Image (tube, rainbow over the protein chains, first blue to last red):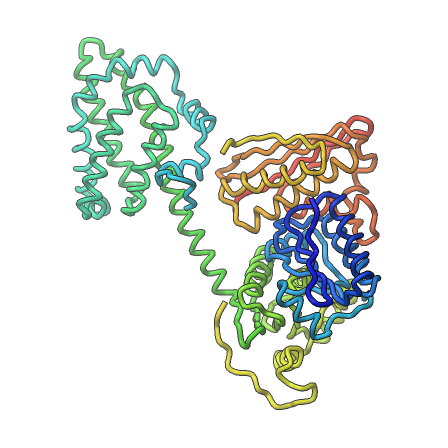
Amino acid sequence: MSVPILKQGDILIASIQSALSDQDLVELRDQLADRVGRLRARGVVIDVTALDVLDSFATRTIRGIAYTATLRGAATVVVGVQPEVAFAMVQLGLGLDGIATALDLEEGLALLHAGKVERALRK
Amino acid sequence: MINIGNQTPAQVLSQEMGLTEQAVERRKRISGLEPADLERISSIKNLVLAHTEEYTSVFFDHLSSLDEGRMVLANRALAERARQLKREHLAAMVQADYGTGYVTQRLELALLYSKAGLDLRVFLAAFHYLLKSIGSTVMKHFEAEPVVGFEAFMSLKKVAFFDIGIIVDALVFERERVIRQQQEAIRELSTPVLQIRERLLLLPIIGVIDTHRARLITESLLKAIRANRAKVVVMDITGVATIDSKVANHVIQTVTAARLMGATVIVTGLSAEVAQSLVVLGIDLAKLNTVGDLQGGLEEAEFLLGYRAASDPSGSFGAPAPRS
Amino acid sequence: MPSESSVAIVRESDIVVARQKGRELAASVGFSSTDQTLLATAISEVARNIISYAGQGEITLSTIEAAGRRGILVIARDQGPGIPDLEAAMRDGYSTGKSLGVGLPGARRLVDDFDLASTPGVGTTVTLKKWLR
């Protein structure tokens, strides 16, 4: 089951629909990396609105995907973390440090269009 | 109450109270109900059934003889329903079948008592009179064999205590539910999240922050961020009684969680001294965006949101509009 | 809704099955949406541990009651290599990026009662309990 990657101008949008397997996530990472390069995408939005749980594995993986896209030169934003999911994540001690975040797809795109997302890795 | 499917309120209450088959069996064991009891109860079944109307009257007469009980009967429809249920209860009491269905039936009456605000002491007193009445009938019937009669009545009393256990637990459960709701309402009132401008929330925290309260604050803030599409939150901790390492960690957690939802949190009211003592304790305050006072924090927030230029000293934010 | 169920954890997709069942069970008992998510996340962590370190195992979910409170009991069992140093496993290692990382100590923070029993070479059992407030 793979994640559809949409293109909007020079921004790629990956909407993760449901809990993905290791394989799916690796595939997503590689596909994004490939497309950022090929299509010269300047921004990437990873949308996790549909995820009702973000455990340590999923968080690490999403971090990895965001880093990979950033390394390829695209400003990356993770959007759609739900209130309960955010709460559970901080209880677990997880964060998305160094990765830009926004409330939802609309906000994420606005952030990218306003040029407010660094295309470099922050500490 | 969460209603799952087409269940009656009594069935829902039964689930909430955890009255599974195993739980009911455990209660029966506690009441001491044994097969021998069931036999004895069956032997007086018809005797009791013949007098259910009389017993029902005894119960309700006693209720109406007391001020606290009279109020319950004030609503005619409720009183009629209660009488009907009581009659059915008495009939069921001697059927020697006390499973989850029997229990749910008791809960229906308990819910009625709870809604009518029936005092527990009054209920127990009236129930006592009812039992006494049944006892008289049984002993009179077994005049020739008083021991047999006594034992049959004692077996029935076990069921009576089983019933009391359920009804009392239900009344207490309902009362605690009300208390819980009130406590929740009080907590919500004490942690208001105010939207003071578009995309800008103000969270003034006053008082003691324990783990439970910190959690409630975080939960309501995160929900408010989503509801208001907030991009900046000014979290003022001037009014927090003690800011120790635990509280600091709660604040950091709240800030981190808000960040996950794309909102920046500016923490105001953290004095330089407190900040220093926290650093000494090893708390990493680098994650926090702190500004000395609330005024400064609000200005910083406006700057972040593009409402004012960096060096614009003129205040321009509107009056707080309390909304959560 | 049965008050006890068991999920075999054999492949990755079972992690989602287990946590979904956990969420549903928690909902039926009356846990808030936030608590449901905490429990589902804890189940996800222990289920992931089973897959990662033991290859396969089993998670049983049931409703429990004590002192008038209702709750959920989660038992995650496997016959894997076991955890040689329980203390180390329960220490927060996420900041150092160690593989056991957040899993167990993190899961503990999400629930009320936590128990870890493990015998190297025999297996591991993690017991979680979450109580309705």
